Length: 228
Image 1 (tube, rainbow, N blue to C red):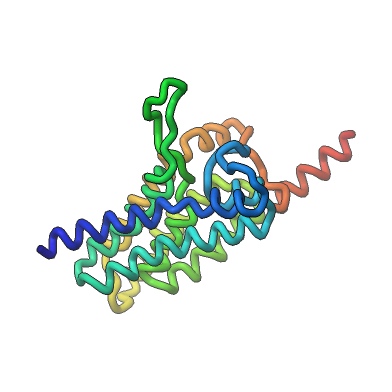
Image 2: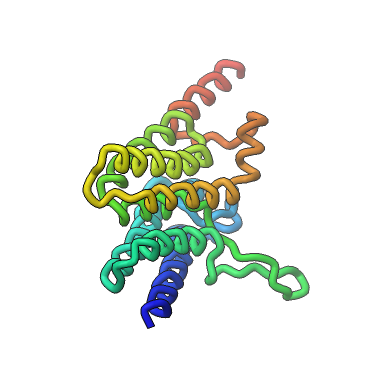
């Protein structure tokens, strides 16, 4: 019976993660379909491109909370730490491959599930597992975002910082620390890397998009103005 409950809780994590807050917010604010804007993803960065800073920030916060909530709900019903970790992993999968966003080809056949890249839900999972982790990772991720201007690099950094934080917590012997939380960071990193394969290729070739509000973006814009 407990096994069925645990499986149901993990699936609930997937359903929560599947909620496309970016699509909803951008649609309400501008009437646009975020899937037709820039990368076509439903996360905070693309919401920023489609509807401005406030839409991007609200999308990111809600995407963080939906993954954190998946952990908090699980903790109310089971003491199995593996389920604590699997629920936010399922939320990342739901965010990246949303059950609510199927795409069909011109013949009406199922093609794929749309979604985001998973950065905000990955952060939310870390926050849900250990709240101080989220408070450490968030400013570090923001630093990467507002300096480099690469949304994809910021997304990947979330998983990296999660592994570092949970690893340090384990080494320092913090009460409640477990290697299972490091496993969360590793799997989250694998999911983010898979989702960002095209962006990683662009990063390596130097053609990745730079967010204009970042330090890198402003420096690049200034150099382009000087050339003109």
